[in-house]
Length: 519
Image (cartoon, rainbow, N blue to C red; front, side, top):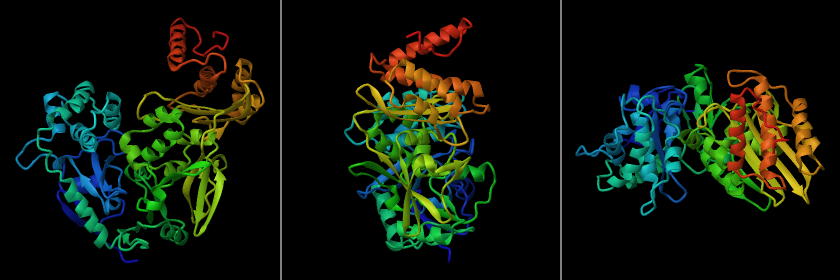
């Protein structure tokens, strides 16, 4: 297949790029090819946020959707048909700073300055995405917007102050950003591009060496996947990108799912929520939390906003990581994974999809097309818990999900799943059996806690010891019972009181384990 250039909007003009490796990152292109050095390289793995840029693309209504992402792990050809905004775009022609920049100056939010451009771009996305006439963002919304940016010297208080204060500067020029001009440019790219948007049924031309295919339709994607079963599937690049930047791996031919509109949708029928494999983590969690508000904390603690903007739930599921935070919740909810191979589809329970460490039931030429999650029922009691060393942006030591159907005080069915406890996200079948048919009481919970030892033999690694993981797993099950029991369920504040009591006991040399008898 003949290779074609990519085209994207940047610095007020449409840029055309060809002849570069398919795995060249957006950050490398900015700094080394375009000499836009305001965007910094820190960790090169999407954690520190020094490389934060904003990518714009046309939404379903023809407007411009802006999302902060990490330039260090995004591959250049994924920009085709999109807009790229960097810190160089913000200053107005007359030299006036954007409100995000001015607020950082006035609030003393920058010290060494290395992280500042990334913070400013996250703030810029928050500023530009705030609807006209809408109220100011809350402190929690600001913290979420800045969750992907790390500061080592100034600290976060003046930066959060700046994110609040920038909305006081609406009288300042909104810099060089012209939303309508960007929309017109993207519409023109879609009309004239020879890469991916040539026709509604276009399979997508290739870019670079090795080949980077970016088909537009689901049928075209399935055909290419069948023809190239060894090609590397790429979605948000939040995992695969690190294979290049950290492990220096050669990926071979790449098949990009990010232009397939059919796979970006979320939809409900009478029985389930269906999430397309290319739906971003942010969109997927928003849809899930609408049905299961218990997922709100896990949603906010799943990586950072720039990672959730780029990564996909389908990619998280297909990767099969034993510490993927989404899988325990989905398994507990009895989710199914929809697989496609050419014109054929099949559906598997998600807990049957994982065969071993990073080994799945995918056959050659097959790919994850969607995840189906049953809608909630009145009898469901559901919780998820994540335990890690940091609250934000950390890998779980243990991630737990519990789903019980309780009818007339008795457990009709139980599904329990953990991440971080085995080589795959795994159900606790012995603990489930200890609960099934029982009253949802202390005795049943104790039996299930004891049964966890038959379900898991966790490893010791840098995040946690085996003994710690088992103790945490037991305690999380007890916490779930405290919060959902029939008799006087505890509110979150009451559960936290138990945690402080445990810490006090630890300081006195006692065990940290919660004792069910100390209710």
